[in-house]
Image (cartoon, rainbow, N blue to C red; front, side):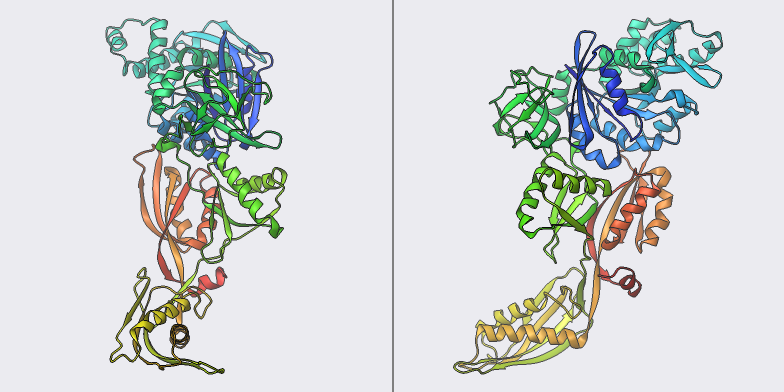
Length: 636
């Protein structure tokens, strides 16, 4: 069996294409759905077994794609034949390039195309380091595409609605254009084959069979990216695409070598009420069976795509669904016998920039919510949680508002946990405005032993990032040494909340003098005195409110880089610069400093400015003073 992923931007006809390919020779292909609207179809074509992984579209579903690509022998990138839409394919081309996966581009919906196909390919080429080569050119009737000419076989095929294309003569008016396009294709192929190069230099006409062999090698080595065309909804161009896949896509041995070994790889997963967690796996070696040890645990059972029919030993390259194998996850989808194998760098889960506080409507569901989110994170690498350090509330990190909505719905329908969400509170801090000395005497008498501690402290602000520093300059034993750690502990207690209600950072406290009582002094008394002394010092000297500043790294198609400068400035950020991304054609890396509280606004602005193509990651950089206008614009 060979497995191909079909992926691309939303509304390009991926599912229609997947189902149309699966139905070319199989009347009712098996199909099963998974989390995130992913699906798999199994079918036969020319007496060979195939599976198509129908990957969900949309930038918020990108984290679900690496595991599918890791389980695939090749990929078909489905795009619409529009030059303006080429940038929407940029994130997918970037991922496919990083994965090194043999890739076809299918220009879909060419029946509605208004742009020249060569211009569409040129627009896509801007985001692909490997040359994209047309394997077909359109056959026109006026401004309408009515068929295609294959540049290798030099045969013309006329499209028919819902039927297979018919072989026709190449129109006389296309001969010159066909020869020019074919010459460009052969020049690209000759870059990777010396024999073909010699034939072209000697002006010999290569055989079609020879050219197909060269095309197979360059695809399997991911040297070139061939582009074909058609209309999945009308049944056009599908047979040519499927025959190319059959002739050129490598078998499972090449996949196993690319992954560096392993017994199986997980492609999609789901949580179902009647089955629990299910994982679609592809066997990389013969003999995968129920009860076998995989990823450090035992495989519970293996079933067919219908979710019911038990399967015996699964041969290498074939697919099956695991049931009662909760230890298998998509966070590490390459499974060995005793554990998981390290995933390639390109398969690492991306950051989750969209954050929201999440809590159950019923407090009794707190544990159930944590458990449910844990189960979802095992099948959704784009989801994570963390705890807000100041409030202690749970923060859900996801890919965007649509992703968040889907998670909330699943928590309710699948796990029976209703939740509410809210904005993440700003992580503001305070620091001392100026140095100050403060004397405090703690004295309390309530019968029996009393409490007495007298301290003189000096408090001073420190540079950003210095933290808390404590020192003592007590002379003559005014404060016994065994009580000095209690003064420090009290000062640390006072840092929990400053005059403005925020944690206090970057401050130095020095114990300079004090007094004690032989009977009434204690650790507790000196801890209380240290705490109150620093509180009074902060109240008298005043504090400055600080906000966290993040270093933002934005990966953005180059055509949008210029638009990010005013965007960052409008969010009270500082542009650090941008440069071309050395690892991705047509992309820039844009860096800036931005208040952490503006990250959610940045997400929304990027989505509209870059048509949802840009992604960003953030890391804490430092604290800065919160300006007055920001206090008004961003209330705590």
